[in-house]
Image 1: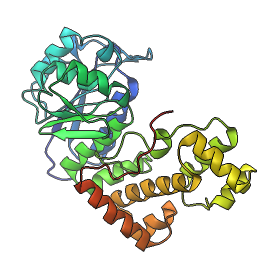
Image 2 (image 1 turned 180 degrees about the vertical axis):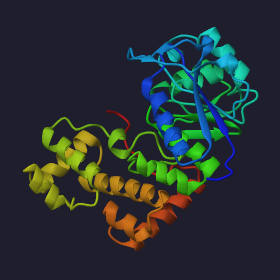
Image 3 (image 1 turned 135 degrees about the horizontal axis):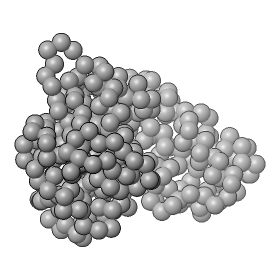
Length: 322
């Protein structure tokens, strides 16, 4: 990209940082840089010393946060240490130094706790890992915690849910800087099956549904999630499980809270909406998701728009117990 302006990105790390919270966004920016987007990433720490991740891996640091004079985008990855105890004063001082001059400030997972401690989430909407939403709300009552979204933008501050959601957040940042086509190509390079938008829920239908205790039912759920476009009719499911249709329906409802037919429809609906959002044609999304006809998908899209207008998530409610 000739004439592309430089976009300095600071990844602020600390002892106890979660590895994937750091490396997921780093990989996105690395591919973006190779494509000529102008992103220039510096991994920095308070004091400039190397850090040790929560998993025990030592990370080489390129710079002392205090030495960075120009930062376009500040990214603070997460770590359980930010939830279990107050963030280190040196980390907070680094955020206080870098954030005011940054065009954007972002956090991954529990990094939201560090931003909140710095006062950057005061009166704003924010996301974090679904396990920590309650803690974030209790500790910082002026923050409006979004329990569902993968990432949230409020003004110049972006916060994301846990771990892999940092990739989605970084893709959104690159899309803002270099356009949708570039972001889509990066997602393909990283073999991200579907780019997820911020408003999509943190947990998919299978993850939000109670996990069956019986092995045949678990296998069926895994097969449906792996390829919703296959034949998952009730007779076919019953034959694969070695059960009668009535017995399968009774067991499935007892263990998941849904009938097999409703579960298949929920998975297909979610897959179709994600495929359309990722740029698939209606016909291709209907085929790949197993919904079949384009007209069926059009009706779902219309219903989803109406639900969204009423403030609903647009997804069939299912249990989050697992």
